[in-house]
Length: 103
Image (cartoon, rainbow, N blue to C red; front, side, top):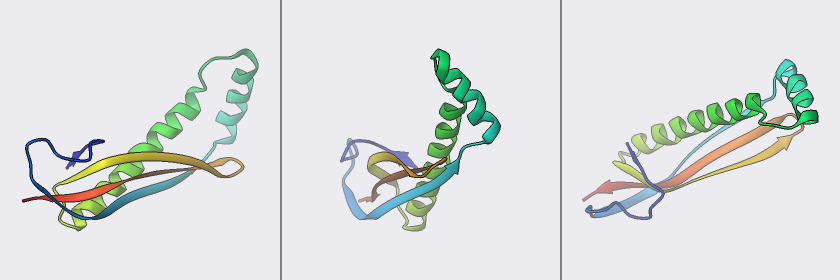
């Protein structure tokens, strides 16, 4: 599946078939949260959170691709990511774009 942040596919004529999306909600691990809190005192990257968000983006992207494939799409264009805190200790990651077929 071709994923692009462009709103077109270079060299291809396309037909939009719908919005494809994927989402996941991840919660923080208490042990990692404690260690990250300690890291917050001295500064630096909070690697546990970076890893959690990377995994969340991968899961959400896979779900979007699965949905696009169920539409019979060849690609998803104009792909965008978003994240938000939905409650203390949990974050949502969403990815969405326009599922298209090649003509």
